[in-house]
Length: 216
Image 1 (cartoon, rainbow, N blue to C red):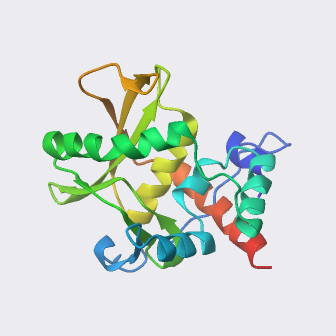
Image 2: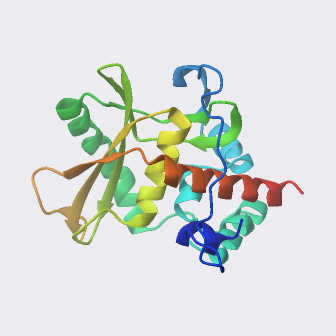
């Protein structure tokens, strides 16, 4: 399945491309708490596990054929990116924002790496995990130097992948805007993103393609 066809939804002949049916719930899915792979508190184990599979960070980058090749290269050779002032600011602010999320939305902070039901190499580490009315909900925290009119598409892919891995129905995307690394508002902004199984099907197909390239 080509990347262009996946994102556009039609082939060269104008026909609609049918995404493969995924037997995600063929048997009762394990509780996500039974699918723990590692914790980011154990950095070495967490990084090693992530390197072997497809993470939400990887899925966020599935925007084009060139992007897919870039992800593959990083997986095979390692990424030279170790962070910058913006990522350092995000790491410093995340615990504070996570406390706000817990107080307002009852979603607990999380640093746990999970795998998808029946797919040990489909991985995600959401920033928050909670149960609301018996349903798994997630939180994803971002900091940004720009105002958002809408949630960037790459972050939506990240969110949909996390929902698939944990079996979640909704994700609260929370973002804090800053100027020169100083938050501009007393509280962050947030928006719920609902699960989208069509988008998830596309991402799962691309992830399986990436894994095939990694292990051939």
